[in-house]
Amino acid sequence: MIDIRKAKQVLKQYVSNYDSTNDRIRVKIGHIERVAGIAKEIAKSLELEEEDIQLAELIGLLHDIGRFEQVRRYDTFIDQKSVNHGELGVEILFEQGLIREFIKDTQYDEIIKKSILNHNRNQDAIQTDKKKELLHSKIIRDADKVDIIYMLSFEDKETAWGSNNIDKEKISEEIYREFKEEKAICYDQRKTAVDNLVSHFAYVFDFNYDYALQMVKEKEYFKKIYERFDFEEKETQEKIEEIYKIVEEFLEKR
Image 1 (cartoon, rainbow, N blue to C red):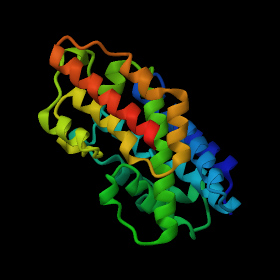
Image 2 (image 1 turned 180 degrees about the vertical axis):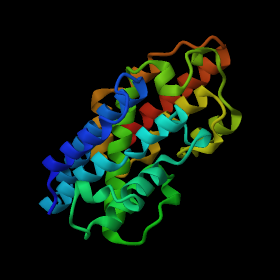
Image 3 (image 1 turned 120 degrees about the vertical axis):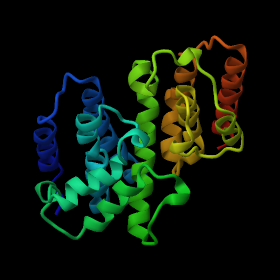
Image 4 (image 1 turned 30 degrees about the horizontal axis):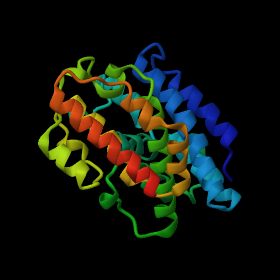
């Protein structure tokens, strides 16, 4: 049995151990709550059984639990500079036993574990051949991206992209090329804050479900992100304009 109400109470107690005045902690608390709700909506749109709807919401609550300890230890969200937060979350939940505080029933453990591990991997790196694990991995990946794009439309640039001088930076040629090939961009290939921005625009190519993509389109999140920037270097500004145009065209076709 999945008791979402209890799981939310346990999460609230867990995050109380971290400094909520830290912007990174504050951002992640709100993100987790919203992702859980979005995952629930996606599951409902797929007309899943109530059990899977509740499981999708629970995975939403748990998917970024590694972020809090990541910030405490390393003061960053950048996995390449610290630790894979999905793997850290699984360690905290399953190796340290925290999962039993959220749910006593063990029957969902592998689905939860695989979904958390897969949520921040590229599509071609997802590791599972089981139908339920793949289903919930796809749901959490989409829900996570919807809310990340939402946050990027208003959060301060230092929190969002790790730089207050992003408008002065350039796009790496490899990142620009991969975007134009309509590929999701690997995290370890990014060299600048603008590369981070381009990788977030590339999320548009990596959605599994039309319902999630429609949410992003209707709220015009990509447009709001694009309108936040006026790059000092003309070439960078032109490339970002081209990238945004590709995003808009893809949304229309999809």
